[in-house]
Amino acid sequence: MAGTSWPVRLAHGPVTLRPLRRRDEGDWARIRDRAGSWFRPWDSTRPPTSPEPSLTFGQLVTTFAVRARRGQMLPWAVEYTPPGQEKPVFAGQVTVSGITRGSACWAQVGYWVDPKWAGRGIIPTAVAMACDYCFDVLGLHRIEIAIRPENANSLAVVRKLGARFEGRRERYMHVDGAWRDHDVFVLEAGPESGAVLARYESQHRPVG
Image 1 (cartoon, rainbow, N blue to C red):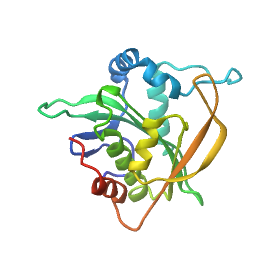
Image 2: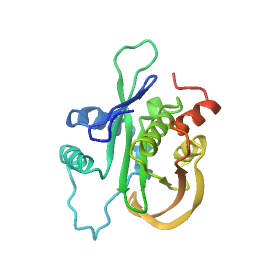
Image 3: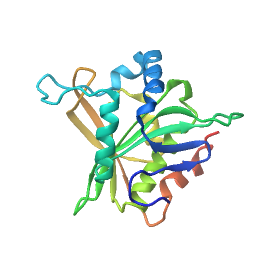
Image 4: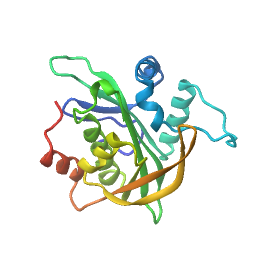
């Protein structure tokens, strides 16, 4: 495993987690333009009362990088190398946010994948790597993943990873223009390193 200082790069098979960067904007925008209807129901939005201004992609990357160096988050791009190709493609994001130390030692994980590459095990592998890093290297105890109950694709990811359903939080987050209920799933650190990824691959075919 890599060290605890940012930037951090992780890889397993054809899936790589590496820091999100400004030059990802073109790929990011093309995916969003092509598959806007796929993402829109699940994208977070700002409530009208929010005092925070909207950020450009470049400003977002810069802000995330500052927070990452402070140990507050891990903003990863997901790269995938398709079979028969040498060059990886930008396939999505996995973001660990709200990293809390002290007596809590927990964080939250969010993720998305280009629908072109959905169903190949890329995101379960990427999220498993991220969680194992948080447990084994950062020493966190608990990871939460909050998902809208209508989001069948994201629900499939947490089930494949063996996350425990903890309950529903009403009007939990502003998504697609309104306050939405979310179901919360939890993964906890175990006695063995790499446990989340190992458990996933023991029950599902490795990504290829």
